[in-house]
Length: 236
Image (cartoon, rainbow, N blue to C red; front, top):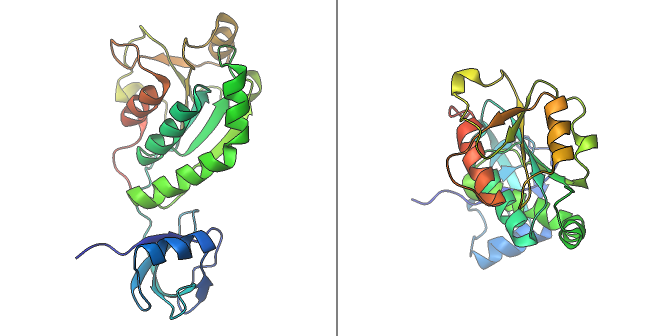
């Protein structure tokens, strides 16, 4: 028996007995998927609440029947500070990074990020957020990661002292027992990496270098490799 379709209803109050109006894009998707009235759904508010529901006769609403336990969320939140690269690579990184458990993405307008790529990322920020939302539904998570618009690195390091890693070619892998306790952020540079000024900023912020293996990885591959090593493997 296949699992019920997962439907995102951002910020909706999910309470047993309540009828929730579905977003138009979700209504269209259910129709294309031939989900009929009365069929079971799983509603997600994007903030961690999940609920069982049944599709209404109109196909535009769902009646909540019960709350469900959170699912797919790691105990450790890992924020990815991602140097902007080619738009397709950034989209891939957000999609697969969401599947791997990233808590948030903050895009860096790095010195080696091409201006056209930074402009494209800024223009596509809503698309990137939709990609993250769709990935949450696909992989059965409960929380949609935030995706922050591109900004220079210097302003993104405030408040991250002592809880920051930086993926750096040639650095030794960091054993799990040496990871800082609690939530983390990991900085991953664009193609060509961070420049010397940015590396000094990261060092001044107490960033711990971490290696991702003996090969040079593209930014989207580095996101997946970093999250596999850093995200807690005991999800809720």
